[in-house]
Length: 621
Image 1 (cartoon, rainbow, N blue to C red):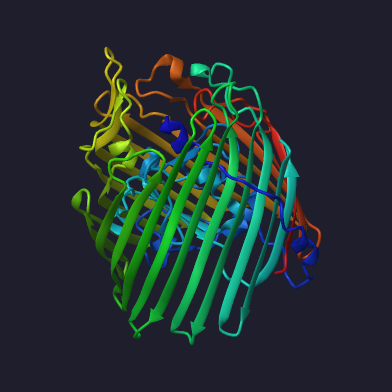
Image 2: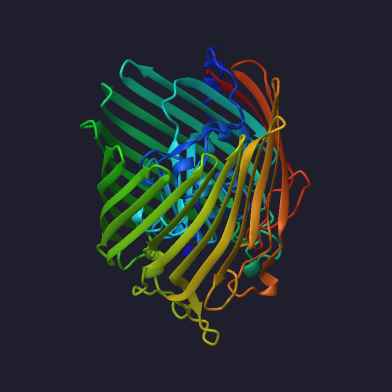
């Protein structure tokens, strides 16, 4: 069954890089602070740099300093703690993981790596579990409809991941913790005259714990530890021609192996490779006209052995030409996108390729206290024809400390190849090549208040999604088919705060929402009505201390709110401690789930109990 294969992706690995640690030469540097309060600049919401304080969408930026100081092991845990999203995970490190933004489906989150889409066009999702944190320079999370900027999939929002940049440094990290977890990574970045380069390598290994519970249905439980191994690298090479022109190449690859449970009779393993490669030319053609030309390719390949063997590969070839025209009153963006998708598999698909040609434009500007944003996009799919999407945003600053903002837009998601063509399995499953794209209309309004280093925001949002794709099972014949059946309406409030208070840096996020299937009135599967996080950090001399609290209300692992599918709410307490041994070296520790709470993110799957991780880090500046 490809439902297992599509979600079970993991990799091979070996520990490397100890030589980097011993080769680390002393240099002038200071241990980076754990947190920052600056007005960050992000590019994801509009494709151009924009201060978060001027954006009409409440975006979140997670910096390299925050990633390093967090000590988190997984991307989804970091996103839950910092990015105000809901997460799922099926049993620990390397197990299938997903992210939901503002109550939308996980497939409604578009993930970009260095501007390129990275996903499986069969499963329709991105393998968050196999994107290693040590390769990430920064993360930008933008909730809301962004199909008018990026096309299909951006119904709930966009998460853009930037791999390590060209800041000159030599850095390394080695750590160990519970479940016999070991991590090691290193990075070298230099600039020689007009040429910049960096390379970052790493590995992570854990014996893990039993991914499934004894009551797992269909006799899938296997009472063994389900381990994970990963090795990864990224690199960047850039050549500058004066201040106006730059050409470069980026590379990212992650490989790994995950053991998972499909029963007592087999040793079930999934190996996966994620990769993203691009070449680009960035040019300042005139005083007002800048251009970006980027060609790239991404791949998601998985090989599964055991009870459900299979091979699936997604190749996405992508081309973007973006032009920015900077005027005194604002910036106009216009460009073209092209993407081809191809499936390779040992499973027969009636169709295994498609292409999308797109044209997009946007405007961002300010007139006194008024801020205006608008975007429009035309996508022409070889499979589904034309789709037009748009958005508009407005903000007004009543005072330097007070701003209101509003945004409305449309979005869509094209069905995955599994939705359309997954091979028929008579008499119980039949594919449906007539499934239509999912469509949404959403709007939000918010207020931002900034007073004496205290920053507050409240956002009210609504997202109406039609033609939701659902697997429908006949209760009499038990025959299942993929259909456009459901309609969903998600309403809610987001609260955010960050600031300095009595020497502490404090951060809090909370979401109150009603994510419901309008056809049945039930909560959407695995979505909570309340979730959020809080964190506090303080530096005392060479010591940095921190505490985090994250949690969620109850959810249902069914579409009917069945009592036996209820997953209780939970709250997790995490503590961290760091000490600067010198201006380059630091030693750190993290204690997750301090109270040893037992909880579920996916029904019948275990989650980590109380665990520790400690690491030694070097950074030359």
